[in-house]
Each structure stands twice: as structure tokens, then as C-alpha cells.
Amino acid sequence: MQDPFKNQAPSLTAPASHGEAVTPSDTALLSTPTRALYVGQGGDVSVEMLGGETLIFRNLQGGVFYPLRVVKVLATGTTAADIVGLT
Image (cartoon, rainbow, N blue to C red; front, side, top):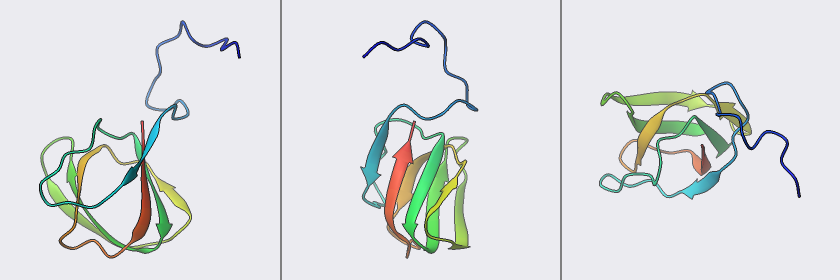
């Protein structure tokens, strides 16, 4: 399949081109910092942001994309499920 945009640099506002299922872990980094998280089943999501801050986003709704640049989704404090990291 031809990609007419292959020679253009992606921006943070462009659609994601890669994704990975996220298993929350207090130690493991994601393979790439995200441009967004998709939360399949709602709840709290504890993350380490690209800038180094650790935050808990409470009561996130399921079925929603959240524009977050994160390097880690922590097991401690995360109650949401079916999380996908998009890059």
C-alpha cells in the first residue's frame, strides 16, 4: 500500500501510526514515549510523564483517547484496564 505521507515528518497532532498494549508496571518503561493513551475500561491511571512527573489521573472514562506523553504506566494506582499506548 502506498503511503502518500511517508516523506513528511509526523507531528504531535497527526494521527498515531504505531501502538502497543500496555501492561502496567512500576519498573518497565514503554518501548517509546506515547503521544496518547487509549483507555478501554475506565478507572484511575497512574503514569510517569515524559517530563519525569508521576501523576494519577482519576476516574478516566473507558473508550477514550487521552493526549498524554508518558514513558511508564504504573501498576500501583492504576485501576483502568485495556490500555493502549499510541505513538
